Length: 162
Image 1 (cartoon, one colour):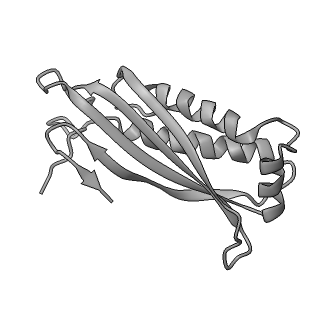
Image 2 (image 1 turned 180 degrees about the vertical axis):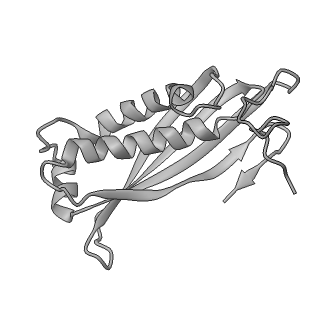
């Protein structure tokens, strides 16, 4: 069984020492899903949200979120991101609760001694928060969830696919 690496011998939190790890290409993809009314999704698609182009702003916000990850998550290393890509999949068919959805996919890449899972998950979360922020005036019931790592590659632990 794997041990927690973010604790020192005294049981206190620490940033893991990655200085001896090999630099490899590391890629992680995460997702988040935003649930909203069909009328809200239609306004997003038609460009009728007062604050602007929701998905374009959310895309930029996701990239910015990935870049700020070590400022938000205390034990994350500042890393050189070589790429961050955000995409959206809209589901206009309401679910059983009458909600449509937008699924956000965030992929982060680097070449270095530590992975980019947290950057990908932060990017997806910040993009979801941005959609909420830009649409809350017309749909206070927006929610988001299903934030998780879909896949990662690189490093000693190899490939993970959900």
